[in-house]
Every structure is written in C-alpha cells, then in structure tokens.
Amino acid sequence: SMFLDPFCGSGTILQEALLLGYKHVLGSDRDPLAIKRTEQNLASQKLHAESLVDYDARHITQKISRVDVIVSEGDLGPSRFTPFSLGGLIPQMKIFYREVFLEFKKLGVKKVVFAFPSWRLGEKIKSLNISKELESLGFHLEKKFFYGRPDAHVLREIMVFSIAGSA
Image (cartoon, rainbow, N blue to C red; front, side, top):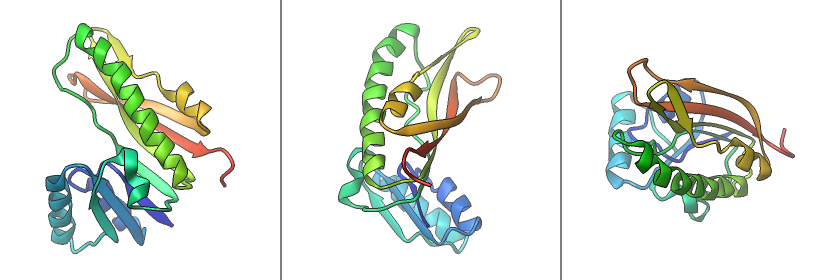
C-alpha cells in the first residue's frame, strides 16, 4: 500500500514506515532543504523512499495521485506565543488544515494519523478544535490524544481518522 508523509521534515516518519515494511513510501515538504535532509537521513540508514517532492501539501495531488495511508506531524506553528497571537493563528491554521485534508480526500486515502499543534497556556490546553470540521469532510475520528513533555509549551494532538466509504 502507498504511504505518504506530506510534511516529512527530516524523514523520521518515512524511516519508521520503511523499517515497518512499507514498500511504497512517499514524502513531501514545501521546504527543499527538508527534502535534502530526508534523503540524507534515509541514505544513512540504507533506506530509500519511492518519491520525495518539495511541494505544498495543499496541492499535493498535482504531484501524487493515490495514497492509502498518511502519517504526519503538520506545521506546529511558532514555539513562542501569547493568548492574543493564538487568537489570530488558530483560525488561519484551521483554514490551512481544512485545505490539506480536502487534498487528502482526493488521494483516496483510507487512514490518516496526524499530529496537530496544541498550546499550553498555564493550566489550560488550547487546541485547534478541528475534528468536527474534518468529520464533516468525511474523516471519521477513531481516537485522539495529547502528547508533549510536561514542560513543553507546544503539544501535539494526535488524531487517527478512517475515511467514510473506505475499508
């Protein structure tokens, strides 16, 4: 089956997919330097991705036509923030991720595991609250959980989706 990390960064998730036995591994990132780092990191482990492209995930179907599984950590935003700056950032990020997930749907994907950003503000955690919106696009939320060190300001909200109408 086809495996994609559309925010591949330095290739950690792709490396894990290859080590788990996925044969058809694709990666993309809009930063050409990230693609170079991914190539170097995979080569250092004698691993090889089928395709690595420097491309924006919102337009990935211009480069890739079909994928079964997507696993990725998206853009987590700035590491320094205020409640005020998050007020402007969160709506922008929701629009961005809605566009990305609409593109995922065009790929015919069956399963998506995705890490979205969340932010610690004192005792509270502020997240994108995007799961309902993605469910309205046909992504069925199977589970979600937060991950982050106790002292971390930026956390990951990891969500597992299956896609309505796929096995």
